[in-house]
Length: 475
Image (cartoon, rainbow, N blue to C red; front, side, top):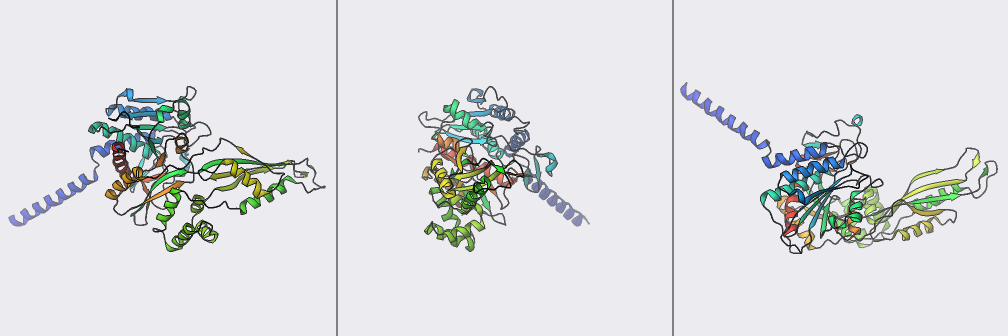
């Protein structure tokens, strides 16, 4: 009986030790716990345009930097006097080489609106569930903002002295630039604040397969130019019982039909060519074959049509696109229309002048009754930044150590980020996060925005390591 009892005691001790080890393994380290707390605080500060405050979020992150050892004098919060809630946090970890330009870590802290009634969970409370973080801004873009802020704190605590300085800019208004954008404002009023050798920004993530394997790490270089055009056709009108050949609605409708049938020519740049070359080795044959065909012959419309059908985003990366998004006209059901207007939204390839696109719209519609003029803020024109070895080598090195065999895929954004303002003033800006998503993505701007817990923590590690390499680079 003593032998059996002793065996039971030993077994119980082994089980208890095993369980304790499992619990300990699940508990985050003190370092990770500090990051989680920072991330949670940032996400849960409401920074929507309607009722939120970027300044409150900026002040919270400033307090964390100062508590982490960054001198308060190396931090500042900047906002126009008439926009006190739109503050941007600027901080710097100084480098040893005063002649070397710093690198800039850029992330916006404003978020898209979110209604509690529409969400499964409170959008402004960070929820961890089944391996995911859910909240508005959990991905776009407070994930990178938190990772960058955390990195600066860790560098300071470790006594890391980079060769070149590391600037941090947490900015406001990326989601509502028609109201205010602090990157644009800073480049105009405080140009030295964002001056840098180059910047890292949102704009690219990573691709996971259906089994969660890391397939491709993206790095974004360049983005398309956003430009709206106002189209108008007018006539004297009259009684609807006496129609004429000059009906403005008919003229504009015919012109828009021609525009819908027209496709701008395909044009590759360094990023898009690199993207399709890499993707053609990763995707299924039904996509790989037309990708290779378009790379070989950019005028192969049959191949382009196949790619368009598979993924409209691929077509958008290949060419300038223009599409009608709004239309209004007429004033009474029993009267000939006197006026009809439409908005055509264009996403223009980098380096293509807006004026050239306007001329093409006029040529395609070929109707002197239709007047065309650009509207809204002029698109920011800039060439895509180069993807040379000084940018790519640190990415490859860290990526291979974390995700052996992962493909590094250049890409170009078909939307718009704050990078357009920096590229336009000569600060090459690259989208790079190391945060991977499945095919569904992060649901950014939509309901129940999310990010994988593992992806966030991996991205934190990736950015920490790659920024260190950039900061110590001799280039």
